[in-house]
Length: 158
Image 1 (cartoon, rainbow, N blue to C red):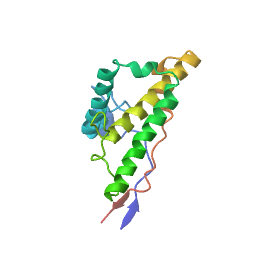
Image 2: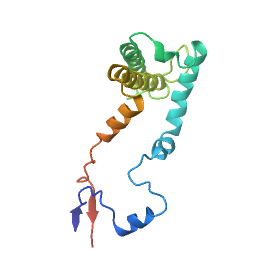
Image 3: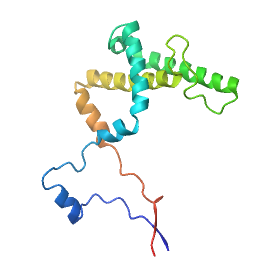
């Protein structure tokens, strides 16, 4: 018999409660999901950041006038170049093989970098406009996260 998984339940069962006895980390961020899950992609994006630091200066992306829109356009150009390469080669999507001519790094790594710049600059602008720290803004955005739907998970019972 197939049953739908139960709704999201933030209440702890006895085993979960006991696991919190010596280390209360329930509900806290799990950076290993990002680090372990996307280590290779992060390394490619980091190489892009390092390339920019060598070409310009470390963290100079933070000081680009009208940075949010300029990084949006730059990311769009890399996305277009990747799409053009995919059309030219007849592949559905040129993920790693479509590289920036100047840096030699995949266009998609540049896209990631440009997206990260946009997010960071938007948080920085919000902090400057509101007088609230970047950390507080980020935590408030994270706190807005809703419980994910669970109805797609089916459980098979005997």
